[in-house]
Length: 317
Image (cartoon, rainbow, N blue to C red):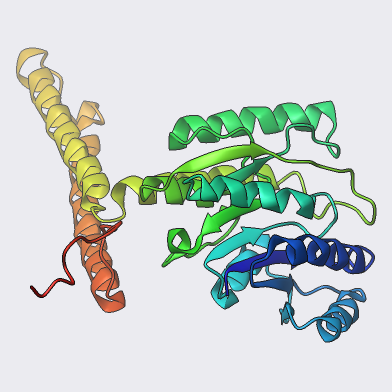
């Protein structure tokens, strides 16, 4: 298998037949062996029936059915887990993304990119307020991650399979895959893609999703810097807390001997004791985190480094 197209679906019964026809029309012309994996994320409408009909029509159409709604990230993760293509393309099935952009994404991969991220340069589904919020959010994500993209929320993306090996996604982290890949040495490029207004139904995303994305970004940033060495976070905080405790103790003693202020007249002794205690607890948590991280890497047979290629290791002369 050369190409896997993954599309999450949730209550899109009207869009499914049109999407499948459009995707097949484009992929049939590409000349690659392909599969279309549609993940039904616990739809409650007739999406399941429409997907079964599409799968009966073409063997390239494959369906993954969830027992309950698990979210877009889980749906994309399931699609990636079941994909067998060397190239993986993700796309929304609500007809807002255009399958005709897929050849353009593949062309960028042929030029040497490892990840091609779609940019809905002319969004057709957002009010001015939503566009402004999206602009600010994308800039914040770019600033924190160091990966500068205009549109992290666009589902239309293309990946070389090796960029997704061993990657596990949770929460709303599907939008951060280019960040993960970039941190692992991937070449990430952005490509403007077409975008259309929703034809059927309504958006499944609420306003609270912005806050979830921000929290997930904090998790991603923490993993990027401290996944292999959590002691640097917990231990660093613990050491500064202990230093603060000693400073508070020293100031309390200064007040007692030079300002004639009794220790019971100031909260500094209690503060210093708390700071030292919190410091030692934080260091112990860091050591426990170190044990967990080492157990994780060794039990999974994983390494923290990522080898791009090997030269002359298969030579016997």
